[in-house]
Image 1 (cartoon, rainbow, N blue to C red):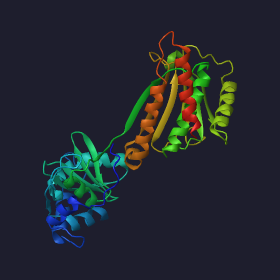
Image 2 (image 1 turned 60 degrees about the horizontal axis):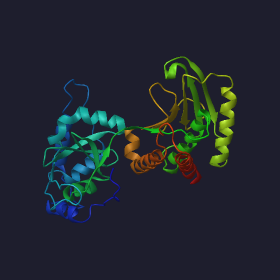
Image 3 (image 1 turned 60 degrees about the vertical axis):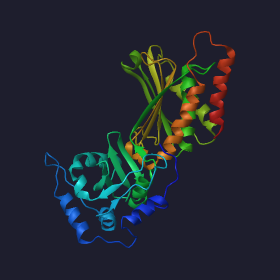
Image 4 (image 1 turned 90 degrees about the vertical axis):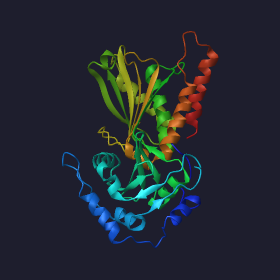
Length: 342
């Protein structure tokens, strides 16, 4: 994901728009509306999906319809590309646009194509997208910004759901319940710090036959207020009490972060689970998923969290048999270091 600061349609890219005939006061009028009607008359092959106009699309087409924008010289970050603003050129992508729109929670409308015939779209928020064989990409938070970025060769940001996992070595001198709880609290901190998930409770589960058998325990625990360390100790005590005599052998144990206390998983687009004991999996497993809409709206925070968790995982490598005390101490120190930043 690109970490560049948003560009507001300035520089060589904006000059390319002006050279193509654009100005802030431009109004393509009838031609823009005719282009919209041409697109609206197009339906998917099965006849179930069609384009729906909305104000942001009308505003964008009134401002830019009919322009042929040329690349503004060599690309700054990627190859610079030109485009033609004409929704009729991209109208046959209605099914793909509808599917992606459902993923991000807004409608899209065709804007035109690049000079390589790659379709461009505007959404209800006014953002500009491009779709190619590599997926969906956001070019800018406005059509002006996006077209300028395209002409100038600014790297777009890919928008896709995330499903990433890590394998961690066990914490030394901790049993599996303590390891899961303490690792889970590190994740609570990281996801909260990056604005992805405000954890209010966790679900602790024990499932027999290494995750393929009967559920032995499934209980939700509210996080106690206070410092991260205090919450972890309180949570660990509550989990131990609930586990009691429940057999943990040959079972998958897991901690799932929850934003509420009902246990109904009202996740704001993000899920995170820590587990141990699953068949064929060693150490501690961490899995983070994020919906496509989250990747779009919280891309910076998501990228930061993924980088931080990858760094944390690299310090908790799965240790081979006979690992030295020095390595074990380093692993414990890494865990304490991440947690103490809260």
